[in-house]
Length: 64
Image 1: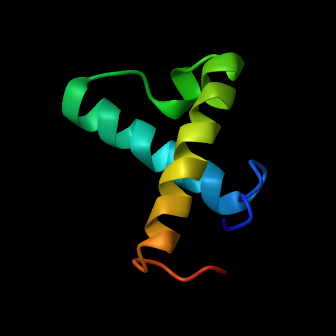
Image 2 (image 1 turned 90 degrees about the horizontal axis):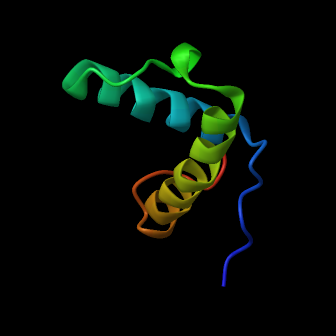
């Protein structure tokens, strides 16, 4: 098992924000800034999981 990427890794926040922007652009959901702090925090774990999956699949490098 690979080490888990910490939630405070800047790539996690960037990915969570980009995913929310896509949701806003495609489905008119709130922008990142319109989410509550709790909703923003709740978005980080899924973003981290997608980042880890992309790294494990070899789609992106392990370090920025």
